[in-house]
Image (cartoon, rainbow, N blue to C red; front, side, top):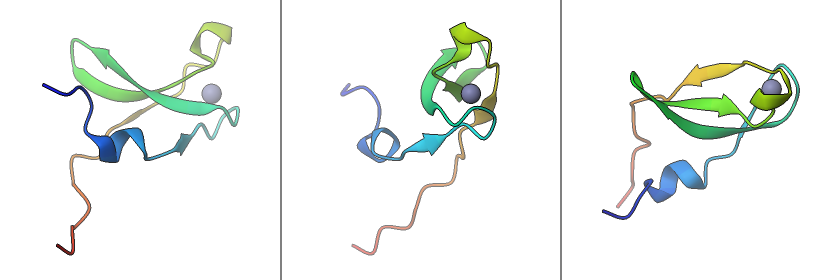
Length: 57
Ligand SMILES: [Zn+2]
């Protein structure tokens, strides 16, 4: 177990509502992108795309 896959950690997501960063959060429904400004009132969330990028190797 090494935590999050590196491709998810290096993938920067930006909140379209406030421009803040999105971070991976976990709920009973699984993982999702949540805004870092959640505690400031921004409730934007977005599902994590289950499709992995194609690795040329
Ligand atoms: Zn936001």
